[in-house]
Image (tube, helix red, strand yellow):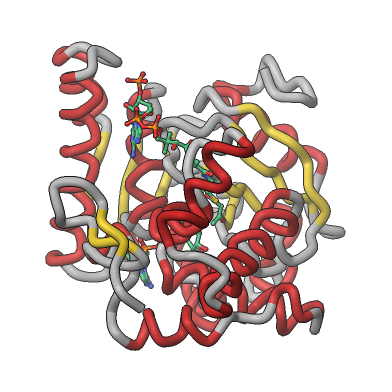
Length: 302
Ligand code: CAA
Ligand code: NAD
């Protein structure tokens, strides 16, 4: 049950579209298919689509292995997923969640195109980490049917979602979004439409401070992480979490938040930029602060 109550209207969203099948889009699509929704997932090329499909397949295989679902449930969920490259194939969706690269222009362009493709009743949602939702809604003719729906990584595990309320969104859209979150087994909180919403406003400066500590030579990668796991009971240290989020995504998020607030605590540390330049994007590329290809994650030289 969401923190704001929404029973009774869950049936109104059955056909979901997910645009982007990377780290987050694949998790959102998987959870939705496992919750019984009919899901269409879009990536722009067949190669990217294949990589996204493999991500979902691997995650479901792991869930079956760990007895989180049966093979029959996996087959049922798999049957509710369709993978496409054409945006036009999202035309009949009740609700479309965007989870593409954290770039304002690319997202606005996508939403403007989707606006011409989907029916008038379709609700649009962005999973952005740091971009104000209103700026994307303004690229469409449906600001009243446009909301922020921010999931957390890994999507199958983390139960929170932030539902972002803009000045233009309708009460009906908010109600339907809460119903969807509940249907997906998530607990929803409402956030104001400000860069970073609630969670990232607190989490991102913490992650960036850990990178700054490393830059200043306060301690090594493993010791900074052990400090926060063992002393504070965090499930993973901040530099491991940077690798989980994706160094490229964190760098973009930091630039966006710094651009918005002009406060130093959001400014991207130069080391993040260097890692992006080297293609060390974290777990998804195999290396970031750690080498994820080693049998046990191993801190890398910087
Ligand atoms: N997909 C599905 N299930 C997964 C998973 C994945 N990618 N990763 C882990 N799990 C499951 C495991 O199957 C396991 O389940 P059981 O205990 O029932 O078997 C459970 O999660 C714990 O996993 P592990 O034992 O392998 O490892 P762990 O105890 O270290 O937990 C973790 C892994 C769940 C990722 C945990 O370390 C954690 O919660 N870390 C913090 C995550 C976090 O902070 N997320 C927010 C990131 S910020 C963000 O998302 C917002 C943004 O805009 C950037
Ligand atoms: P990612 O790099 O893993 O995946 C992005 C995917 O979008 C890629 O597969 C890419 O091919 C695809 N893509 C790019 N342009 C596209 C387009 N025009 N149409 C369709 N697909 C396109 O990134 P991610 O970590 O999944 O992040 C996606 C979004 O979710 C970002 O806005 C990010 O800020 C947000 N987010 C990320 C996290 C996280 O921990 N990584 C958590 C919450 C929210």
